Amino acid sequence: GGALFALRGSPFAIGGAADDDLRVEGWPDGFLSLRTEGGALRASAQGEVTVNGEPRAAGARFEVGVGARIEHAGAAIRVATGGELGDGSTAIAEGGGGEPA
Image (cartoon, rainbow, N blue to C red; front, side):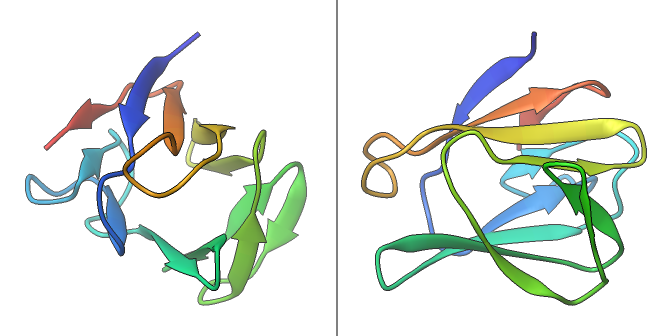
């Protein structure tokens, strides 16, 4: 389940703030940043997250591909499709809800 959201910019901020590109209940303001680098989608988080069940330390930068699931505080996003940023890159907010800002 969940809702689909197009990634329309780089960086793309995900967190609990009204001005984040995608709001996820229970996540700190600006918690996760997604950006394109050399044709890849990379992420960094202000706190610990799990990516496909693997823990990542706060501040770590990591590549995310189609199907990647990033979890924090009982909510998750998943990269659902690939493609050029703003023309097919999509994230699904799962658990805890999500809404575009």
